[in-house]
Structures are given as C-alpha cells and as structure tokens.
Amino acid sequence: MELLDLHGHKGLVVGIANKHSLAWSAAQHFRNAGADLAMTYLNEKAKPFVEPLAKQVKAPIFLPCNVTIPGQLEALFDAIRKDWGRLDFVFHSIAWARKEDLHGRLTDCSAEGFAESMLVSCHSFIRMAKLAESLMDKGGSLMTLSYYGAEKVVDHYNVMGPVKAALESSVRYLAHELGRNSIRVNAISAGAVQTRAASGIEHFDELLNETVTKAPLRRVVDACEVGKTALVLASDYSSAITGEVLHADAGFHIEGMVFH
Image 1 (cartoon, rainbow, N blue to C red):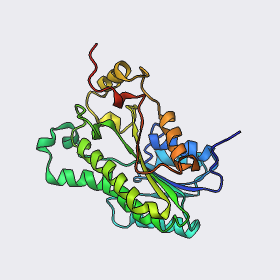
Image 2: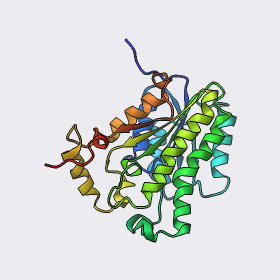
Image 3: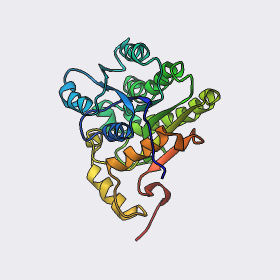
C-alpha cells in the first residue's frame, strides 16, 4: 500500500485568514500526512481567527507576516532557519487589491493600486522563493494559488486577472531558475470556492452557479479538494512536476464557450 507521507518534512503555510481559507485546508492535509508546520497571521486583528488553527495542527512556529511591513517576512524565515535549519515546502496563499480596484474597471485602476496588488499578490511569492532557496539545500516544493481569471476574462475579477497572470508567469520563471537545485515551483488554479477572499468579488454567486452548469463534473470544488492537490505537490509523488498551473476546478477551464 502506498500512502502520501510527509513525516520529517518541514513546511511553511502563509495566508490563512480563518477556518474557511484554502490555505487552512492545505495545512490540515500537510499535518495529517505528518509534516511539521510553520504558520503565519496577517496582524493582531486576524490573530484570534488563526491562532486556534495553529494550535490544532501543533505548529511550533507561529508568527505575524504582513509582506508590506519591512522585515516581517525576513524575520519569519530567520525563525525557521534558527529552529529548523531547513525547509521542504512553502504554500503561498496571499492576494490583495484595493476595493475600488477590485470592484472597478481595470481601465480605471491607479498605478499605486496596481503596484500594491502586484507587490502583495505576486512579488511576495518571488521574495519567499528567494528566502526559501538556501533552506531547501536538498530540494523542495514551492506552491501558490491562482484562478482561471488569469487565463481568460472573468467578469468582476478585474485587476486580479493580470496580477494572477503575472503570478503564473513567475511560477514558470522560478521553476526554470530553481530547478537546478531540485526546487519545484507550481501553482494550483483553484475553482470557485466560497472563502473570505472570494467574498470580495462582486456577483460571486453567479460564478458558482456558472461552474455548476459549465464544469464537466457539474459541481463546484470544495476546499478539501484544493488541499489534497497541495498535498500531492508537497510530496515526492510530484517529483517530476514543476512550472505547472494545476487546475483543481472540476474541469471548468477546459470548456470555453458552451451553449445550452
């Protein structure tokens, strides 16, 4: 019998907001497979929602991480280096845009708003890759979350479309650069799941309904399925997979225009 086993592995999960977060589902699967986890929270307001989850998976490292605050991300990796001395995988689940940019036209997005969204949602993954590289001296897995709106226009996704497209392109370039060190870099393009982040997208219920109608499996995916996908990417079962955008979306992305 073969089982996914992460015993002895050390992993970092960044971007859990609450128990509904996709990153939380991933963390649960990592821990259930035996991995030791480092977890983060955005700020003191978010801490009460995340701390009980960190305790649930017995995370020995639990620190604040707001990538817009100078030094916080570096302090996190310094703690990992001090306590563990290495890292086997990173799960990055951070995305942000100003409300007016997320709800408004891309045409009207300000330079400042666009830059902030890119900094938080995309460049933070590049920074994590750089900080993780020296801790993954025996190889490792870097993962991030994307969405179909990076590939095709999705109404109301607005500025996050080009930002996620940049993230997916960064996955490929990072995979190219870090592959010589046996570090794999992949993205999971998750289907529409009701999370805190999704609640910021206007008419999200319409997207859920469209998924049920259009996706080959005729249903939406749940957070657990995204977490299982992350588990595979963190494990040796994906040792030959890098530079990929792996869709966990009930097949929604293959359909194109379907007329009923």
